[in-house]
Length: 275
Ligand code: KMH
Ligand code: ZN
Image 1: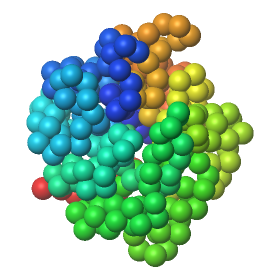
Image 2: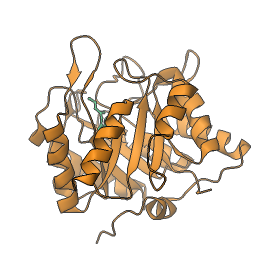
Image 3: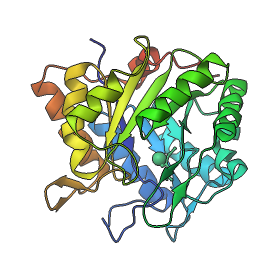
């Protein structure tokens, strides 16, 4: 079984300091949170950025500054910018961080309700547009799927040449509007991807650690972090993203799974070689 790749989604676009005061907004706070996750064993940082007042942005220059600061503080770490951004952003706004040629970026594979009146919109043409951009720039997409139908979409677009193999999925489970976070739902998604694909699982809220345990046992990979969950145990706020990563590392040790370094993660995910 491959070593376990841990991704830390340190910030997200929706979670606020009101939910957990350690949610990072400033450059320094992003570096602090990325470093805590990296020191604990994360090899990938899934990155959204904010302005200092907490407003989410896909501004290329803001990404550049924060990515450079994280790369400096966390040597070798894989930085995976979001192209999902926040609900309501335009496609070209969302795609800005791809202009920095990261090794990876997210590629959201369908539209879903996102709470209240919010709709996270990803039409088929949007997914094709994002997929083509990532192929042109040699960026490995992490295929974010919030439901089974989004796996079908990704598989269809792979056949049409908008996504390349080997495919890497992120099962985002437990979003209000997407698939649930039960073991049954996990088995369903996991059984629906090709045998040569890899996956990570991001369980929202109370599903984070149970789905992490399932993926550790199954040979998959795990994403944790404030974007998905701010609690380290019931009613107890995590002090940092690192504390959530530490918990996954403890689970993995108990279950006999070793943790991948960033270099090992690059190999497992067949990441493109960048200069
Ligand atoms: N903030 C969500 C609307 C991604 O990073 O690609 C989208 C999201 C997905 O978080
Ligand atoms: Zn995200």
